[in-house]
View 1 (spheres, rainbow, N blue to C red):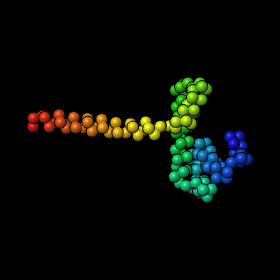
View 2: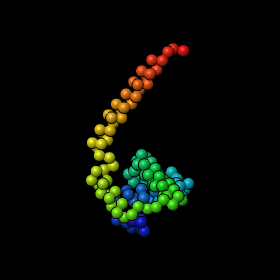
View 3: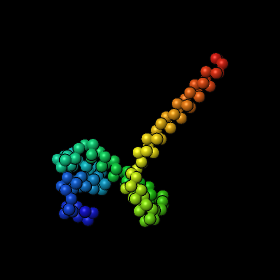
View 4: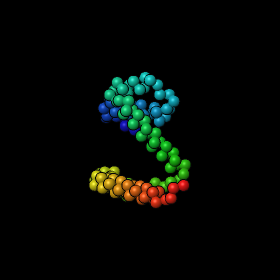
Amino acid sequence: MLNDLDNAPISEKDRALYAFIKKMVRASTSITQNDVDVARKAGWSDEALYDAITVCSLFQFYNNWIDATGVADMPALGYAMSGHRLATEGYASEDRAESAKPARTAKRRKASKSKSAKKSKRAPK
């Protein structure tokens, strides 16, 4: 697919999106309404195109930033471990995400009450 998008064994819908993104990455100022229309005709919504543009633009930014700052790549084992964790646990386990919300909310309420109590104890000016 990377070497020959036109003959890659992918759906026409995916081919249209990848062609759109390829043009966006290589010559973003040359994107025309026709390019958007071709992607829409293939079945992509405006929201999907927006997401694809955003994700690819962010990766392009990150790659440029990493290259310019000299950030070192992870060793292969790091990628394998990260991939395994994402495949088995996802980005954030539901238990951790759900249990963290009430704790943060409770802390905010407590801090807010504490500030209110301190303000009420002050003598009026």
